[in-house]
Every structure is written in C-alpha cells, then in structure tokens.
Amino acid sequence: MSNQAINPAPQPSGTAAQTSAPANEPRYFRRFTTGQMWMHVILFSTFLGLATTGLPLRFSESPWARLMAGAVGGFSAILAFHKFCALVMTVTFVVHVFEILKRGILRRDKSVFWGSTSMVANWKDAKDLFMHMRWFIGLGKKPEFERYAYWEKFDYWAVFWGMVVIGFSGYAMWFAPLFAHFLPGWALNAALVIHSEEGLLAILFIFMIHFVNTHLRPGSFPMDMVIFTGVESEHEFKVKRALEYERMAKEGKLESRLAPAPTKIGINLGRVVGFTAIAIGLTLLGLTISAYFY
Ligand code: HEM
Image 1 (cartoon, rainbow, N blue to C red):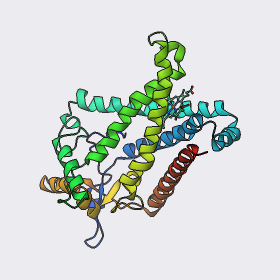
Image 2: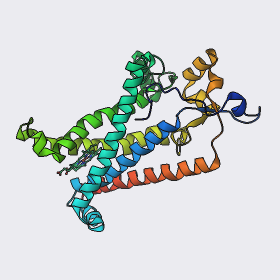
Image 3: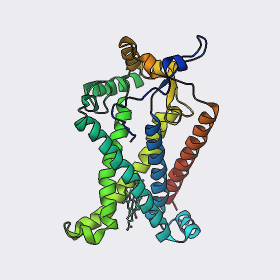
Image 4: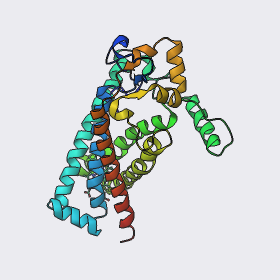
C-alpha cells in the first residue's frame, strides 16, 4: 500500500538537465515518490508491530511469549501496543483509499483503473503468470513486465484483503459490545478464529513469500533498495521492467523520470532499516515454528 500506488506518476525530483549523468556514469530513474516510500515505511513498521504483538497473544503458552509479556508488563500491555499499531495502519490505509478514489473518480484519471500502469490485474498478468511458471521449469521464455508485475499487484491487493478480513474481525473483538448490536454472538467468537488464522497467514506470507520475491531473488539479492531510495539504475529498469522502459522510450518520456543517483547515506540507511525488518521477520518466523514444538 503506497501513496498513489495505483499508477503513480512520480514527479522527477530534478530536471533532466540537473539529473542526466555524464556518459560513463549510470543513469537513475524514479520509481517511487517520497510519499509512497513513507507509506511503505509506515505499513511495514505497523505490520511488524502487529506481528510482534499478535504472535505472543496467539502462542501465549510458549516460553518466549511469556518472556516477552514479562518484559513489557504483561499480555494486556502487548494488546495495547497491538491496538496502537492497528490504528496507525488503519488510518494509513484509509488515507490511501481516499487518495485513489480522489484520483480515479474526482479527477477522472482512468489510468487508475486500467492500462499498462494500473494496479488492476489484466489479461497480460494471467499470461505472465502462466509464462513465468513455464519458464521456471525450463519450458519457455521469461516474460517481460510492465510497471507492475503480477506478483507485485498480488502483494498490493493482499493488503486490501487483509485490512477487510483481519481489520474487521479485529475491530469486532475490540469493540465487541458495539458489534453485538448487529452481529450474532457466534460471529464474535468466529471473529477471533478468523483474525487469528488470517493474521498468521499474513505473517507467514510476508515473511516467507514477500521477502523472497522482492529481496532474495536473483537480480535483487540481498535486498532490493528501490523502495528505500525511490530510484533504480537504468540497467535494473531495462531488465526488470523491459516493457515499461520500451514504452516510455517510445513515448519520449524517459527523460522526465531521470533522478539523481541515490546517496551513500540513503543506501546505508535503507540497508539498516531493510535488514532490521528482515531480521525481525525471520526471528518471528522461527518463534512461530518453535511454538508448534514446545
Ligand atoms: C488492523 C486492525 C487490527 C485490529 C483492530 C486488531 C485487533 C486485535 C485484538 C483486539 C486482538 C485480541 C483478541 C483477543 O481478545 O484475544 C488481536 C489479536 C491478534 N492479532 Fe490483531 N488486530 C489487527 C490487525 C492484525 C494484523 C495485521 C495481524 C497480523 C500481522 C494481527 C494478528 C493478530 C494475532 C495473531 C492475534 C492473536 C489471536 C489469538 O489470540 O489467537 N492483527 N488483534
């Protein structure tokens, strides 16, 4: 979920004249706006907070869960932190949805809903998925991608699914007396099961699939920095999003996306934040697996 993530039209942070590199220096292109990068930071921080607090609530009998609860003043303190992260995540999500609706409906920007830069899945995504599977088993050519590949769209919409299912069930438990006015009693019990299972699924998906897809695959290993720096090199752009690169070159719009090279400080900061997030994720993954054995 990121600010203007459906067909974002990132503004170049400098003019082509300011940003075009000397002939022998690699050129960089903007992929994400500062707003989108911040939205991602808030999303993954609150997600890590929700996972770090939700797992000890779920596996409260495990020694590590008791240790965590003891360290912060009990399970009620853990739940309070869980609710705080849930609120921040919900507000961020609602802001994003309003922005999308503003662009798509009020400004009548049709590219939000369809076209090569929309986040809405299309027939090409289905074909790409099929071609990719064939390529994985050595039966065909690797597909080339537009601005957003099918798995990036999947990750994006997964947040919407999670907010509706996990969010709704979470608020139903939090404000049970209020929800009891229009939900039967059994639905409130079901909310805990749904929340718990969907929460665990989201945690496993992010820490196992999303981490591997975005950071550990060849070409991105050990970490794809584009979400932290907002820019990618021309080589990365051409290789990872060949169709977008070709389309923009044909339309004569490439220059408008030129951006300054990321600074050393920016890259190192991104690395520290990114590796910390991955370390927290992998630790939680290990604790979750251990909870089934101990
Ligand atoms: C966004 C809105 C959310 C709200 C309002 C919310 C609220 C809550 C509440 C009130 C509980 C305590 C349930 C009880 O009384 O035992 C809880 C538990 C839990 N939450 Fe959330 N939560 C939210 C999002 C998430 C997310 C995104 C995850 C996953 C990363 C998650 C994972 C969990 C887990 C694993 C539990 C423990 C369930 C159990 O005891 O089996 N929650 N949540």
